[in-house]
Image 1: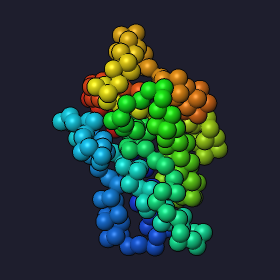
Image 2: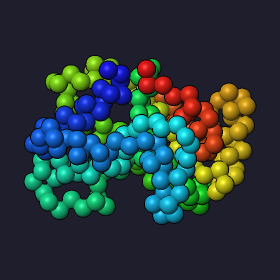
Image 3: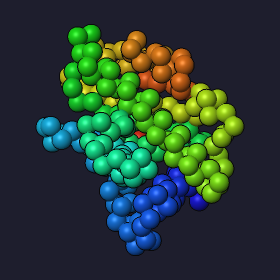
Image 4: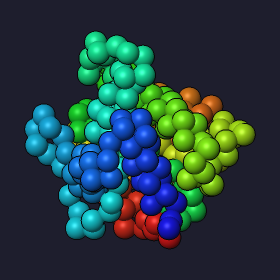
Length: 226
């Protein structure tokens, strides 16, 4: 069983224990958050897929998993008034590669520029919110020993060595970012927008942006689970 499969098993057992559901129901819940990269990249506002390639890369749709997570937290604090808009923010896709690098992937079809502070804030908020949710789940299930590849003693160090945040944006809507990404790739590097530097410097192993074409070429086509 590879690292990605171990994490799926962790989530399934987390739901089973905290929602008191049967093995049969686990499959029904799993359908909600197990998908592929193409479906995870869908922008509901315009029905556009930012990744529209042929490779069917399996992912955990963390944005959908938060519906289950919110239900669990509501039960734990005995409060039925936690509304969806107050739910923890999560990225669109999560997966783990053969080297135990954990990828948080957020898709944005909108234009990202200096005046778009709300969009930038949302991107950063999802990074912190998603990592908090993962930690909460990991420590809740620590005694079950599903993730022997996670450093429970030093999660900060683990994030600095193993977690990467990737923002995938539309090249058509972000021509300047597309140029920066292209320039960075010509120097065999990644482009990190200034507003994402705090994630790279203080929280994760790396944080950078791809346009959809570079994402398919440099990430999806090269990705391996084991």
